[in-house]
Amino acid sequence: MEVLICDTYDDLSKAAFKVMKKVIDEKPAAVLGLATGSSPVGLYQEMVKDHKENGTSYKDVKTYNLDEYVGLDRNDPQSYWTFMNENLFSGIDIDPANTHVPYGDTAEDAKAYDDEVKGVDIQLLGIGNNGHIGFNEPGTPFDARTHIVELTESTREANKRFFDNDITKVPTHAISQGIGTVMDADSILLIANGAGKADAVKAMIEGEVTEECPASILQKHPKVTVILDKEAASKLTK
Image 1 (cartoon, rainbow, N blue to C red):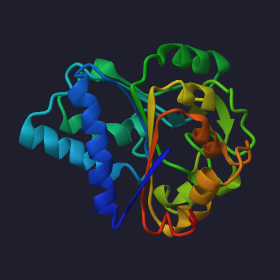
Image 2: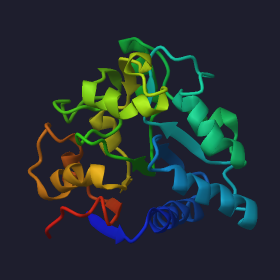
Image 3: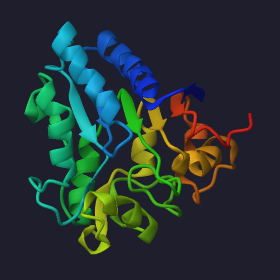
Image 4: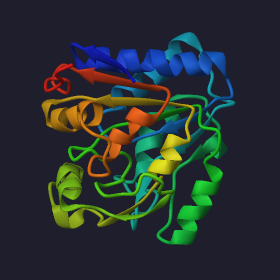
């Protein structure tokens, strides 16, 4: 596990972009695993800027997103489908047919998506305040595949800022790639910023590998890059 600590969120986003750009330069038909949330927005802005200024092409790239809320229409302003289109896909030359965001509310929907996610060259991750990756909450088995998840109160509380600060508007379930699915990726890039992530980051990097901190399994992956700002790294001791 390579850990990079940056002074600012802007520096973090630029460092993450370098990792992502290297994959695309080496393999123009790369398969990217993508994530939503506030952490990757800066990275996506760097990707759009590079495409517009330097002509980096995504026409042969395929993408598979980690997760999506259950019960939100794809065109809902808070759906992850909308998020990806607004923050990345609309700004680059990717073929919409090559972009994939899970959708559905049944085990069959989850398995169908899991069967699609193959050959991911790099999987982008954030980390939740409780150590979750994707929507794999504490206690999720490490070998889990894509599944329907009941969201914890802490995760819904953390996400209510996107829903008018009204937790009753936050969906109670999501469809999420499982930890086993995530670990199939050739390489993993995890980014985290802010003091609120410091405990989870410490548990992920310096704690024991336990399902109580889902991200701790990344210690077992052969190729992981973790990029943090100073606040997210503030509790690391090594």
